Image (tube, rainbow, N blue to C red; front, top):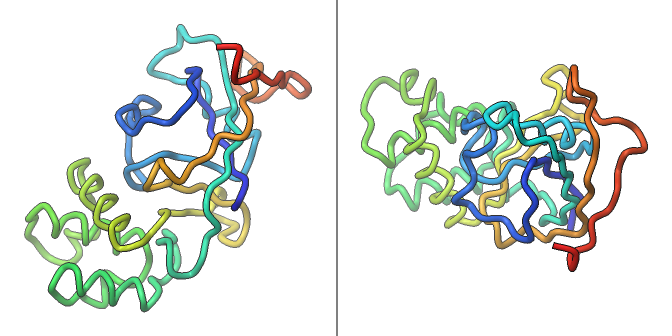
Length: 201
């Protein structure tokens, strides 16, 4: 298991995919539960622009399954052959080479195909709406993928990662901290972390 973090302005005891879009309301990197390897980044994400009246911020420490070559799509890396093979078998059709180049293109292409979108390969890999992202997340989870992943810093593709967890049942909450953020940039105030016991709410 790996340790990751999730920032939120809402206190809860278990994840619910029904609330997946209540953060920034987008599915830019795929549909699911967004987590990060960086505690400070998670704290920053706890600020919800859609709900600025929420002044309480929480960082959840989580355990999630280990990443392997065959259980994730990485946004800027080529798609593993076994994932391509499983995808083509489940889809019943060949995925063009242009859509296999990196994970984000592959995800969008498959999502668009699943909801019946038509167009050129460039069109099908360029953009995916929410319905396509939901379809892709469900499809890839069913063929054994755990994540969509991308580098926290695009300039450091081998550094820390952010991930979309496709199956919330694979997430284990280890700890919940209440944190303070500076009011200007909404960055973590060092030393402000205070653990909240599970039996206190």
